[in-house]
Image 1: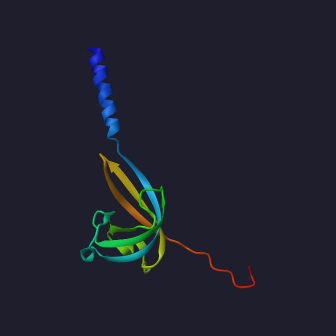
Image 2: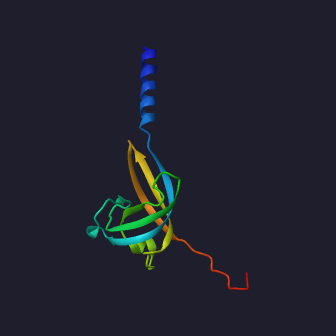
Image 3: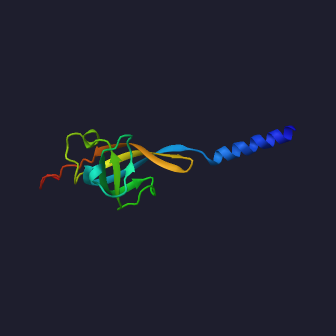
Length: 130
């Protein structure tokens, strides 16, 4: 009887290990191609907010960890507000470092918590000063 109980507990522990869930963070650098109202967007979007109202389209330049999104691909995220994500700046055409959390649970992947940081480029030195 004790062996049967131990075997059952062991099998249950193994089964729950196979349906594990986890959250990780994906970092990407990308250039904003467009931000439009979600109702005006046709195509596939990845929701990253509980109340999405806009489609943010970016061209991905790099991804860490690799493999989450293909480099060079154009990806559309469904966001709540461009003003909350980018502030008062015009985002179109600008390059940002984005981070987003990825949750995998029971084989289903969801994304949340998209953040953006403007990529600052160092000023070029004046001729004869460098």
